Amino acid sequence: MTSTSYAKGAELPLLAKLKLWLSDRGLSAYVVGGYVRDLVVGRYTHDIDIAVGADCAEVAAEVARSLGGKHVVLDQAERVARVVVFEAGQPRWHLDFSTLRGSIENDLAQRDFTIDAMALDTRHWENATISADQLIDPLSGRVDLEQGLVRATSEVIFQHDPGRLLRAVRLAAELGFTIEPATALLIKQHSHLLEQVAPERLQDELCRILAASPVRRSLGCLDEMGLLDRLFPGLAATRGVTQPKEHFWDVFTHLLETVAAIERLAESLDAELGRWAGMLRQHLGQEVASGHTRLVLLKLAGLLHDIAKPQTKTVDDTGRTRFFSHSQQGAEAVSNIMARLRFSARERQLLGKMVEHHLRPTQMSYEDLPTRRAIYRYFRDVGDAAIDTLLLSLADHLAARGPNLDPAQWRWHVNVVDYALEQHLATQQAAAPARLVDGHDLMSVLGLRPGPELGRLLEVVREAQAAGEVATREQALDVVRKLIAGLNSGEGEQR
Image (cartoon, rainbow, N blue to C red):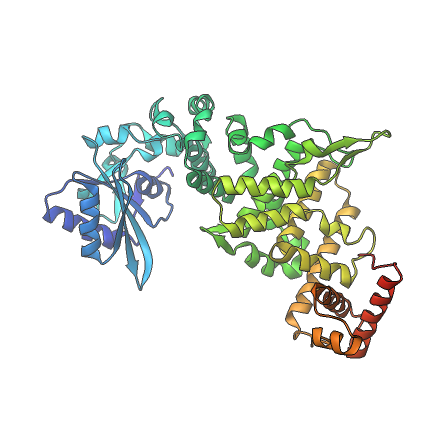
């Protein structure tokens, strides 16, 4: 970053084409913002921001036709339009055009942060490298880049666009920078403006913050500047809520530490769950919706999994603290939060399952390894969120014990997860077991009538088959006979 020259990459031919196109039409233009910032710090990007001395929507439409791309107006009020340029049929570049606001110096002064208030005029677009003195940098953004600071260009940037409140934290997280103290104070003073930001933008910035490491630092930053409680009002009630002696921290700190533990766990899969590390990394990297990976959503679940503890806390006559039904109430609260932030239905369902069942992995067995029946029930009930919830339970354990972690208890928990994965994946990889009986068998052989009870009885058979307790048709029918006899005698099945 101390270099005084900066090398361009694969975008060079595209910039040369754009320069020629703009020159032919006598248009002034500058590459600005994030592209210049990333060029200076040596980050590769597919996004190029261009300020033009003309109507950006008209320019974008013509550029799209010239390059065979597609264009869309992103913000009519702010005069921003995007052109998507394709290579081999796939989107390769995003060209975001904005209309120049007066001189380039005036335009840069109206941007949000100094590190995004630099520009490069068309004279240097074809150069493979540029020097520091070729940058248009009226606010010393390059100096802030070298010092690792996110600094506001003025005191009014958050009033003009409250979305910048989260953007500041996101930039600091992605670049590994610090928010300059005066800017941090401005953010805290204007944190109430977060309520004016569109939910979709809040969702996007939040997920990008969660995707960047170290996430604990970013969450602390959000908290110190008053943004975390604005994003999640329910978190405020968790502050100072004490927990049983097994917990080192109060509920609020425990939630932050759970997210940090998820990140550490994801980075140490080889050490903790070595034989499943590759599969788990692939699983966590899966995109669920809108570019959000399972790992990002797992971190969000970690942040919110105990959000219902304050209203469910009880202390009995012996002084024992409990949080009855906090998982179920928490799942409902999380679903409401996700809906407010416009997450997809699949994302809401995934987080709801994780929060509702985050205690289940350790409830499968309290001493020995869980039975095949318990593992079958767990994966049946938790479904698509089952693997994620196993990892959440491990992170929850780490964040509960903190520096008082008992190595033996931790190893037992890891072994439970390892064994559950082994049994589940072995079942998945094996050929689907043959159905031993169906509804017709139960009606014809046992004289049962059609109805919902048939489905419940068949599920009992499937569970027994998964547990290795039955392997033939006659054994399956015998299980049903015994169950019916028990029901008729009033005993029922203890499930």
